[in-house]
Length: 120
Image (cartoon, rainbow, N blue to C red; front, side, top):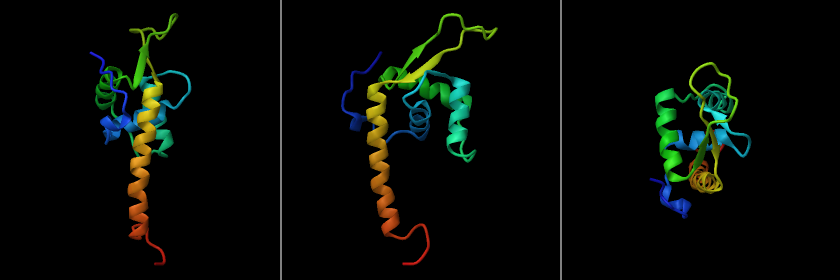
């Protein structure tokens, strides 16, 4: 059942995998699961990966929360079961923005405490 939450702050802090997926989906075309895993790896220069079990559990939860929509395009010729494609919703974008702001505030604290080294 889809929750009709409209305040992005109610979902914060996000699970790491949820935030990764929201960023990977961006505002572009819908992506299937394997493509999302590739984007996560590419956007982190290979430093992070999302495993299939984690990804699909996150996507199911995200569909339920209204963060992403799911579709099966007509004419999918993958040869196996029809691929499911996912796209970030406007609510998903608002939640990603709220999480980004939350993390930015923490990053400012880390900078103030010279957590990145360099001259004080």
